[in-house]
Image (cartoon, rainbow, N blue to C red):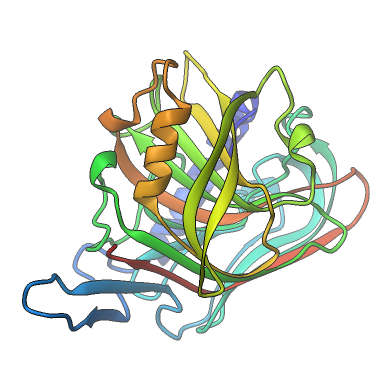
Length: 324
């Protein structure tokens, strides 16, 4: 998640111990597991096989991760054979009632927000939480999932050329949807520090970009085009870039679709996003080519006025990785 939030990190650390204990009790064996629904498409002898890994759905057992209080902020569970971790993660809700949950029902991932807050940890951040699914070694949670080709993590950013495919639907309700996004992490090693990068791809949002990425915290990093498949049709997707450079911690690059997609299927290459990031970061001192891709998260960042019941949700019907 884009972090306006070092002030909230202290609060996150406080509850992390509770979450780690919960995750340890629920985590399935991932070190020896194999990914679900792996498909190899036959090709000619002169061409490599196209490998696809289906992350969601993944298995059939219902799994639910719920946060009803700050002590459950980092509640998390693994689904299927451990290739995906789900979490409600209302990281900026300091005082609140209700619940935020992520549910895997065997065929889809459903995230629901039904909560009313009175105070944020960071009052300046236009985000209350990030109910999400995670693949890889998340540098904030310090937790890892099982991974394998076509995207065996970690790997150098310059080698990350797999295609990420998702089929989803957003129900904004009365929330301010800051973004429905991928959160892609590039680091030098374990943890986070100066020179590391959080790259967000905003596929949907209801708040205008000028409000979600206000100056001077964010600076415009140009306009670009990415080749994508939307609902099966190839399109040249216009993208706006916004950048926040942090010399004391990690930096954040937002790539936002100029035309938000509320529901449907979207597929695009991670390699294309890396190449856009190379251009957007030129001259900043942040060199993505020297970093490793360690984690890909997907979910919704939401916000809204205090002391009001906020209700919104999303569903992910399919999330897959494929060789390009």
